[in-house]
Image (cartoon, rainbow, N blue to C red):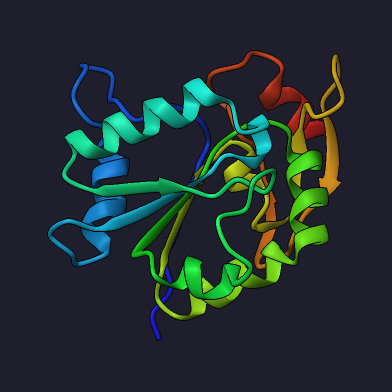
Length: 175
């Protein structure tokens, strides 16, 4: 089975000229579905309601069928079957350390790998991209950038916001 992980350093759902992000359109296109079902996992930002609402509105405009997974109010006892019903999953940015801790507690890390291996297109930005690598640069601890171990599904390290935050590049290169 072919697998797809779109690891995005940052950004949003819209491109620099105001239209849909080309990267996000590619995620949806990769599902090979006309109206793909896509799940937001907003764990890293604490399930921010405005972030969830924004995702739902934008995905509807892009022709997708959005939903989201909250680990604070799970929609089902059978998360594996629920996740495998989606064509794509998008993991939001936020706190990488918190994301990994909650995922491991709920075994979501293992379920997401099963979804990936079943052909679900996985994507994420910032913390949602960090999590797939062996290690990453993160600002999960306020006021400093540090290295943290991640899931290790992808070899190497990852640094979100490498070009958009002035301290990221030199700190990552020192690490």
